Image (tube, rainbow, N blue to C red):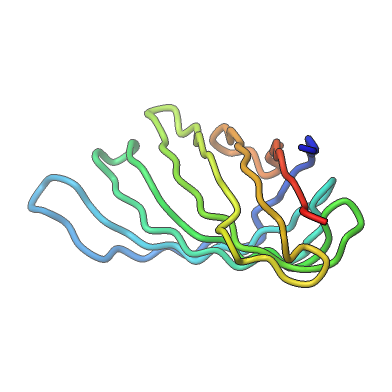
Length: 136
């Protein structure tokens, strides 16, 4: 049975470093990010790594992995989210994510699921939606 979960996360830290540029074209960067989750997911300090492609100074796409250690609807454990997204001229980020198969631990060892968020530029507290299942 699928459970629908919601909540929000807050960016606690964002450290971005350029890794290369093709002349005056696309630029690649990496970011190390710490988020704090509240709501269905409770995790005060996640660890996230992004690879970012800037196609212009304000637009691009990214992929990343986030290690979440805490609770999901009262069950303790951890899991990894694989994230894929893009951002446009107005700075709004659109991201979908899914639990990496086999990454669950503790009471979340059998976790599967996927979700999404939209983060308007400058907003620190971002709402997420997450549909998940836990096998018995």
